[in-house]
Structures are given as C-alpha cells and as structure tokens.
Image (cartoon, rainbow, N blue to C red):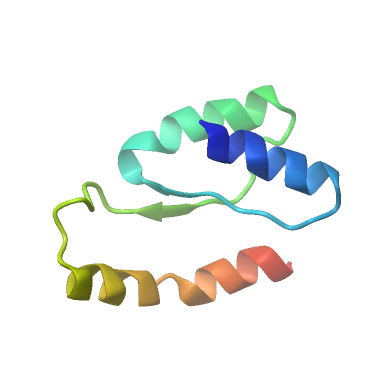
Length: 75
C-alpha cells in the first residue's frame, strides 16, 4: 500500500500523517506499518465498499471522520 509507505516517510520527516482506507485493507496496512517499525500507527477505517456511494452519501460519510482525522494529525 503506497499510502502506508507515504505515511511512514512523512512521519520519519517529522510530519504527522495518517492513512484513510476501507475496512478490507486494514490488515494489510497493519502488517505494513509493523514491518516498517510503526506498529500501532493510527489510521482511518471507512466501511467497504465506498465506490457505490453517491456524492451526497460520500460527503456525509466523509464528514463523520473529520474530527478523527484532525486528532490523528495533531497528536
């Protein structure tokens, strides 16, 4: 997962980062973070699938994660 690799590289440079993914990719991300020495790194887990959501549904879903995203990037 490129997003995990990117998050690790950002974190190494002192820049807070997180990964936004759907549930189906959670285990892969956990293993990749662990293999890169960042076990337990936070991520934002959306329900799967999201590709079938309308714009309005995706917008509403996105808004439910804004606070979590802000916390992960500021802690």
